[in-house]
Length: 110
Length: 222
Image 1 (cartoon, rainbow over the protein chains, first blue to last red):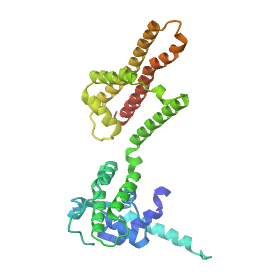
Image 2: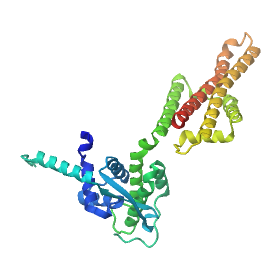
Image 3: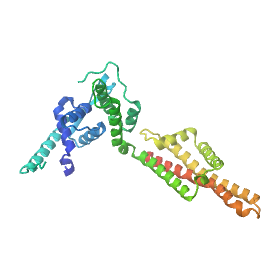
Image 4: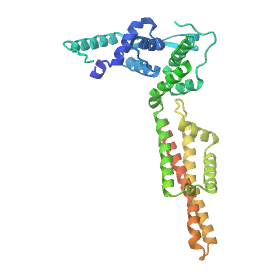
């Protein structure tokens, strides 16, 4: 695995955590709303899907088609879930960040 | 989940169509469904900071820009190249004098309609329609026959435009030589010569556009 694939970008990290939080309800609308409510990040739905597609190509998540409902104009949902490889990547990423934070103190000047 | 409004809301159709055109087929339905679901939820809420239709437009434009180069890169490059060509031509014309010097409707009529007619005669009306469609729309399921027909139309139209330009320039020269006498030569020759070579210029412009479109189609679909 190349370094590029081994480590997660910030948004990739956040998205994987969002999928874990939403569990079986992880699809576009819910993910976007969770990001907005939790970290106040207003993501374009296109940018969200582009990152999810990239994560799926890396094998870090899996997707499946769900039901279509009237409130979606009869269109199906695409559910996402984190794969075992994705969970490993998350653990590795968190561990790296925790190690780097050790001994670091931020002094607020304001 | 937010309550759905009693009347089914309609999102801005143009925004939805633009986004659907740009999106890859495998995620199109799901992404549009997500947008529509959130739009309906917003329509059912009160005291919103942002108008749902405005929000929908913003999402569509931001998402379309995200996928535009990825999905329609060839088309965008083609449109930009035509725009640059026209801008440079216009700049050259303005720097060369007045813009009206380069516009002569009879010369345009002598070159463009006959070139298009020859192009259709050498291929078909369908090939003419396909040449426009394939130049501006990236399609997945295109038959080889359609590509060959479109290329044939563009090749014949471009080449005929140049040949017609040369031919009608010669007509102009013959007319000039027959009608200008020595006494009025210095005052009349310049403007008459300028008009006579305009047909050649229009023919070459047409050839440049047809050649670029033909190469684009060949590269994209062959």
